[in-house]
Image 1 (cartoon, rainbow, N blue to C red):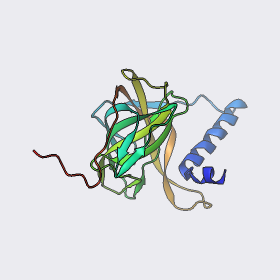
Image 2 (cartoon, helix red, strand yellow):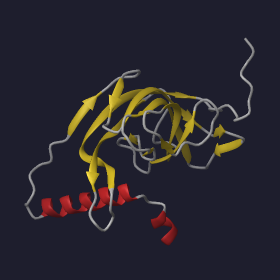
Image 3 (tube, rainbow, N blue to C red):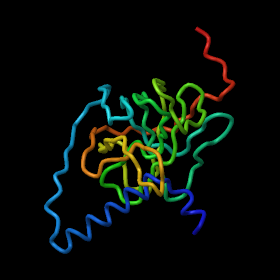
Length: 204
């Protein structure tokens, strides 16, 4: 249990806590209907969530994902991976953490589980101010939840640079509870293998 808690970042717990408060307030009639604001964007089009600018290119189903010197995401019974190729740029003034940058809408049991550098397959955990990377973002989901040839909706939650309470200290980018960008992508199917870190580029 302690390990499970440690793996959950502050941002997820903050968001979960606010969701719980809103749900309780609505139950007792103290909350009006939340006005969710959605900004549609398309493949190849820039979308800014406040902290990052994201350009989503394509999505494919993956049985396993090889990166760096080995298998980053091995095949697992009952699960598949949705690999999303995108370019990310940090528009802020502090390094930004990338976990949960994409959300797979209307799929139960999904989980955002990693970002790899497209160039060499190395793991990316943060992106410095002004930096941009072509990346492969991985979301895992139940095997039958997403099918090749169908379309999926991905959400990018907008963020606000917020002063945290004294107990936490400092400032942090916090996800909105209502505002997000949404992109509808067709899903292809292949086993994606990223270049190894010491791989030579193909001869021209």
